[in-house]
Each structure stands twice: as structure tokens, then as C-alpha cells.
Length: 275
Length: 294
Image (cartoon, each protein chain N blue to C red):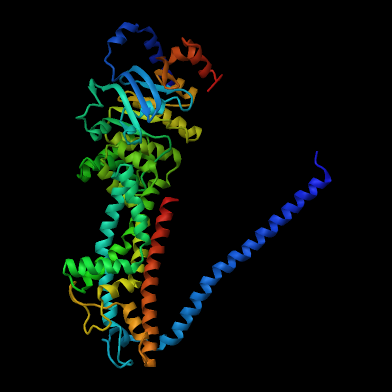
């Protein structure tokens, strides 16, 4: 109940803020005319947009519209895909993440990612959360333990697993595994979290837990979530972007997109008339 | 509209198919059993001939002209030396090559040629490897007919098998694990070392052990390299002369005295024990690995 109340207040505040002052706010991610190809197939056809900090931005659109590809540009996960090439600029906090000098590993500490299916490592719960820290060279056991606990608490999982940290992560339920994956991401202390349909493999109760969690996390993090679930987008996001066939059709406050979309296309999609 | 004629035709077809199914089942069982029955008969025959001959003395005795005094000690030690050296040479080389091919090599003509040739290597007759080993290791590198030259030759022989097995198990690691590791800021090396190799280790070990048990049974390439049928002492050094169990068996079988035939049977039992034990370890690791991923 509290959450709903907060949510409503936020919405009112947003509605009363005039657009100009928001325009002045520095974007967390700024995308300029980005095009992506897989061999000859053009998956993204020139998209420009700004992502606001400390907010949840939802990417919606039918399967194959390029939203996941677009999401994976921000932590350069497409780099490993055969035939991938891109044009355009993506800046995070003002610096181009596709310039030559950048260390992809550093970028990914800043930009965490949660995947569609929970994908814990076949290791203990503790090792899963500590992995991101260990690969940074952190070996101090006390520090590791405290960071692991902090991350698990943030992901709302600590109370459920605090006595079983040595148990295999694969023994957890699907929803717990996904929260573990979120904890694992949080442990590295990123500023942006990318979520690629994080609840599509989960039951409604686990989904609700993850949604509450996303709502809490946006105070500190910039969150971008790809979702096929319209209700989810309207429940948890502040901004919504609708993609279709590699293009950004409409991008606005979630409230506006879901109540009075500018484009007919968007309206058809969110009301379920196609897609 | 289905006429009665049509229905009959369909029923007939179903009957014929069932009949074919049954026939194939019988054929399949027969094919499976042929191999098994022959193996059982063979092992039974060997056991009858040789089991009485096996005692601690047979394992620890040096070779002798008198069959009742002869033992397999030098050959067994030679086989173990070959096994250990081959492991140390072939395991790291094969796994490293597989990691390179699977994770680093750019897909293109070069890697395609490499891949085809590795498959070809797996099909080269072992005696050819023997000749290769004789020329390169024994003569050019001047290692002589040593246990090291033999092990290097056998390493070449099993390298393709190890590479193929390792690549298959690396491929079997779910892509999601890789993604998760990269997304947390791990480098390629960290991902391979911390996630992919541990996850693939069961399959890799299985492949390595099976290929080693093949190496232990190889005779032809070692004869060409120059392993001896009679060595008075077990090798104490990688450059020492050596014999191995299969050569010892071959040598004993070609002797006229009946006692040596019995010795050969006993030596076969010991060789089989070694390979069965290795296969057992391989099966154990495979099961353990499968459990982890279910």
C-alpha cells in the first residue's frame, strides 16, 4: 500500500513539473543516431534518445523490433555476436562508450545486466554474488562478506538465504535465482542496470517481488527494462519507449504513453490490437 | 469421406509398420549383444588361461627366460611412465588448443582448415604416428628409443581426440553462463578460467581419460619408435629404454613355450584392469558432471 501511495505522489509531482526544467536535467545515457547491422540485416535504423537518471525506462514493442539489441548496446554485449556492426554515438555520463580506448570490462562494472532467464553460476550463493568482486581482484574476506550481505539485502534476498550461503545457487527457486542475479549485479555497484525481460520466466508472486525491488532500486540506479508485459511497463516505469521494426516510434512519460499516446501505432500496440 | 477400402489400406500400413518396428528391435538387440557376447567370451577365455598365473610376484618380477619366473614389472612400469608423461604432454596441449579454437579463433577459412585437419588427424592410422615419432623425436630431436619419445608420439596420437572432446564440452556450457560472467565485467580470460573450464571439466576429463586408455593399449607406434620387448630394468628417467604391456604380451605370445602363453593371458588381464579402471574413473566424472547441470 505504501508503495502505491509513493508512486502516486511521484506521478503528481512529475505532472506538475514543467517540461523545460526536465530538459535541463543531464541525461544518464544519450544516444545519437544509432544504427545496428547483423551482417546485411539492419536491426536498428537510426535511433536517438536520452535516458534519464534515477528513473525506470521501459522498452516495449513486438518480438524482433530491436529492443533487446538496443538494450545490449549499453554494456556492449553485442560485441560478441557474429556479424555485428554499428554506427552512431552512445554516451554514458558524457563519455562515448564505443570509442577505441574504452575498457569494456570497466564499462560493464558501471552498467550491470539482468537476463531473461535466471542464470546463476553453478556455484554457491556466496560465490555467485562475490564473483564480480573477485574478478576485480578483491580478496579481503571481510570486505567480500560485507559486500555480499549488502547486495543480498538490497535484492531482498538476505533473510531467505543468510543461513545457506554455502548452498548451491541452483537449489533456489526461479524467483530467488533471479533476485540472486540482481544481487550479483548490485554487488559490483553499477550506476545503470539493464534488465532484459527479467520476469518473463517467473510466476506472478516472484514477478511482484522483482517489481517492488525495481521500484526501490531506482532511487539509486538508472534502470532500463525490456518487457513484453504492458501492465508491467505501466506499473513500474517512469518513461516508456515503443519500438517497432528497428525504429523508435514513441518515447514519453509512461503516463502519457498509456493514456494519450501521440501515434496511432503506439495506441494499437498497448491496447493489444497488434503485436 | 473415408471409404472402406481406404480404411483397410491404412490398417494394413499400420500393421506393416508395427511389424517393421518389431523386426528392427530384434535386429538391434542382436547387434548389441554380438559385441558384448564376444567380449565376455574373450575375457572368460583369458581369465581361464591366465588368472592362476597372477600373484604379487608376477606383478613385481623382472622379465626372465623362464616363464614361471618372468613378471610384468618392467612393462607395467613402462606403461605407467608412458601414461604419466603422455598425460602431462597431451592434456595441457589439447585443452589449450581446444580453448583457442572454440573461444579465440575467428570463424573463417583458417579455422575451417584447422578443424578439418584435426578431424583428419584423428583418422590417421597409428603406425603412421609411429613413423612420424621415429623421424622427429627419435632421430631429429635425438631422444632415442626412450620413454619420452614414445610418450610424445602417443601424445600426438591422442591429441585430436582430446581437442574434439574438449571443444564439445566447452560448447555444451550454456551461453547464459558466459553472458552472466561478461556482464559482470569479467574479461575473456576470467570467464574461461572461472566459469567455462570448471563447468566443462567433467566432459574434458572424460575425453582425456578415454583417450589415455587408448594410448595405454597402443602397440604399433611404440614398436616403430623402438620400444623394446626385453628391458632388464624399469625406466627411472624419461630418456631410459622402455617396454610397455602390449609389447610384452605380443612378445610372449610369439614364444613357443606354453608357460609364456599363460603369462601373456595374465598380462592381458592386468592391461585390461588398467584400462577398465581408467574408464571407470571417466564414467564417474561424467555422471558427477551431468548431475551438476540437471
